[in-house]
Length: 188
Image 1 (cartoon, rainbow, N blue to C red):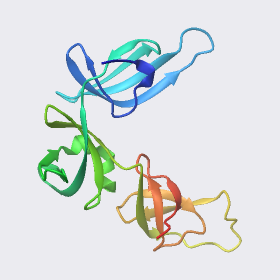
Image 2 (image 1 turned 90 degrees about the horizontal axis):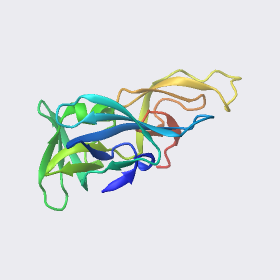
Image 3 (image 1 turned 90 degrees about the vertical axis):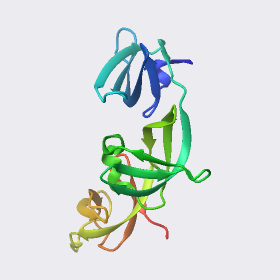
Image 4 (image 1 turned 60 degrees about the vertical axis):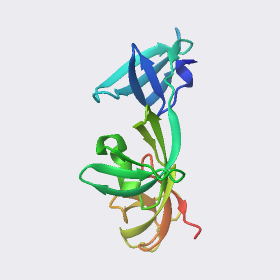
């Protein structure tokens, strides 16, 4: 199926010259003069080679047929990360390279979307937000204003992030899984 290059998103799978690539990042560039272009950073699925391509935003790219299904995270071992299809109870193993930095946010029973091509996993999409507990942070200094100032904190998964000064250790917060940035206090 042909689609405009500018309509591709992170995690999309494209077929270029008979090889499958997963899109890692998309940047639409609109120069002051000239034609707008779409910069695609991709990883070739067969061997993991990273490629960077530029297309005019109106250019057509062949999008590969990919089966996207909901899977549940089970556990991690030396082989990789194991997921189960909740409908059929089929299990799939995903390599650590494919999961990447998102591995820190995987929790038992977490629902993720796996992209499958011919039955083998080629891309993973985590939920956009995760709720974690702060295990370590600096104490609040009296007189600091709550608006606009941030302090470093360590989350229960070991990831370091910046949180507002009024947040203390033991507080559960919501973070973005893409970059670990603070969103809000958890409402539970």
